[in-house]
Amino acid sequence: MSDKPEKFIDENGLRLDGRRVNEIRPMKMEIGVLSRADGSCYLEWGKNKVLAAVYGPRELHPRRLQKADSALIRYRYNMAAFSVEDRIRPGPSRRSIEISKVSREAFEPVVLTHLYPGAVIDVFAEVLQADAGTRTAAINAASMALADAGIPMKGLVSACAVGKVDGQLVLDLNKPEDNYGNADIPMAMTADGEITLLQMDGDVTQEEFRQAVELCKEGCRQILEMQKETLKNKFTKLEEVEISDDEEDVDVSALVESTLESLEEDETSENDEDIEEEIETDDVEDAESGDEAESVEEQEDSFQDVDEDDIPEDNDEDVPEDDEETA
Ligand code: UDP
Image (cartoon, rainbow, N blue to C red; front, side):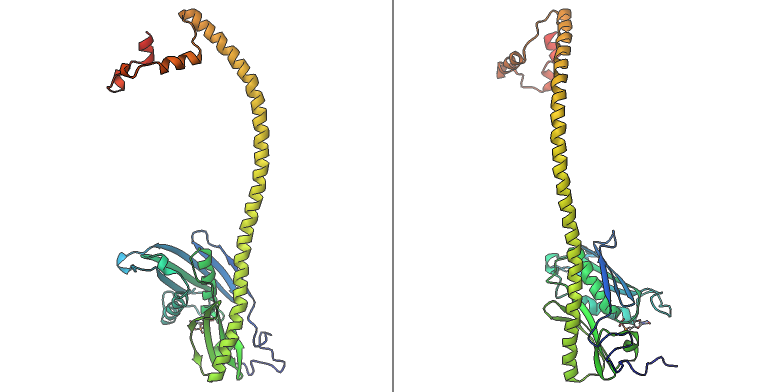
């Protein structure tokens, strides 16, 4: 029995999940969620849950795969076995290999790979829960993970799908729209609207296609805003930490100053005691050896008065020990 709904859009223009045709599903993202990855992002979009991790740039092994003039981007899209109702067989499938390829190509025009010849940038996108639009969700997360890893890029990549249900174009397909709609057109683009991924499943007219691109641009613009906001939040937080560190510095320096002052006071009194102690010890030693105490200046003068010719050219062994000399 098919679960195909009779209607996807009601008389009020609302879709099955209550969205308007040009609305995307609620999205939230967080970056820096994995400590071992150079960059990472966890993204929820509707019921989709995706984790992206970026490693690199790092030296590519085996070396025969290295590119002499640029870094290689490797992208692995994977759906967890538990991500959908029917268990997904672990390991690569035709679908996941295809998605990995087109997603890698979505980043190649923006990542400044020429800066890292011989290196590899690994992008892993793990779909933990799938509910239509996982390749676009993964691209959005991967884009953030790349930025989080500090990989130089011309800009962020944002992705969204446009589809057709009930003869109307709709933005960001949900599961029934994806499964039973007339068309599914996932796209990825840069902030300038340069399309880096475009796939199409189903039929649309040329005019509908043009409108689909415009609709998708609007969706990607909204996603880009969220991506930028997430990055800004992270770096604003870092700045705050730095500011509070500075404040601590001020306190610390004040503390250091007052500690130094009190140390100076202590030192003066301790020095007095030391001097007294030294004088007492010297007196005892002098009395024992019968030598006269030399002032520091006198010792220095006598050191400077030594004629260079008097110093043996040979190694240190020939230089008599102080004790021996005085003995
Ligand atoms: N799906 C599934 N099993 C699979 C592949 C996909 O149940 O082996 C579901 C999953 O919810 C996915 C949706 O079908 O999000 C649409 O898949 P599609 O191939 O269109 O890719 P996506 O829209 O996720 O990028």
